Length: 259
Image 1 (tube, rainbow, N blue to C red):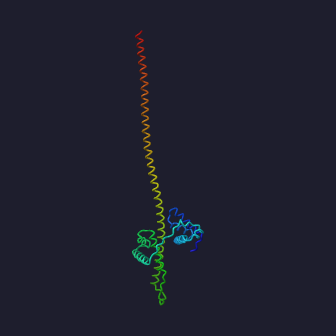
Image 2: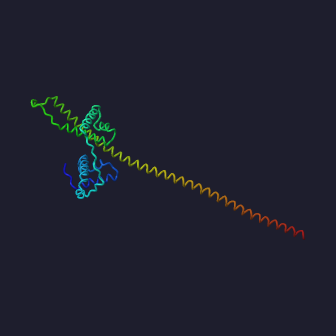
Image 3: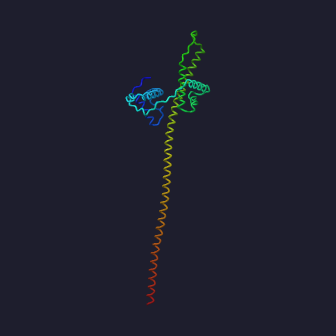
């Protein structure tokens, strides 16, 4: 893989900061950067954490790259002892013989902890690579391979290719699940926020509803009061008219008697 230049390095740190602000997993940032520059996600991840560790102790380089190291945390690595490495290899192989994949076996050993699962998986794969790289000496007396040996080597190669393809697919699925979980958490936060807003609207609606009832009752009271006043006023006017009419009739009777 080609060397990193300063512009790429600065952009990588800017991408990581951007994804952190959006509360997205860093694995997504590494995949995004790897796709853009045709690099491997694991290579991008390893370079990032290696440089973070270096910049923590190198102020001159931090200044040259103009990187705020306060926004970046070094990777805390818990190294395996020889005993732990041997136990891990033994337990994983036992689970593989039972039909587990490497990822599911490591997940079982990690009790569902995603970070611990990745740690165990990476260590086991490194152990596998070291074992495959060991040179196996063949007897110098045997110059040609038998058909059975050739067939066995071919089948072994097929199994390795199949295993590699499955592990790559598992890596992709794990990254997609991690992204989906981050999106789900974001949606849940929004739902909680909307639920609170809905409860506040319901509360305000009840307040307005009660105020409307009070206003209606007050209007009815005012209408009843005015009706009573109007009735009293009309009754007074009628009584006055009636009294005046009676007095007029009495006056006419007196006049007739006098005549």
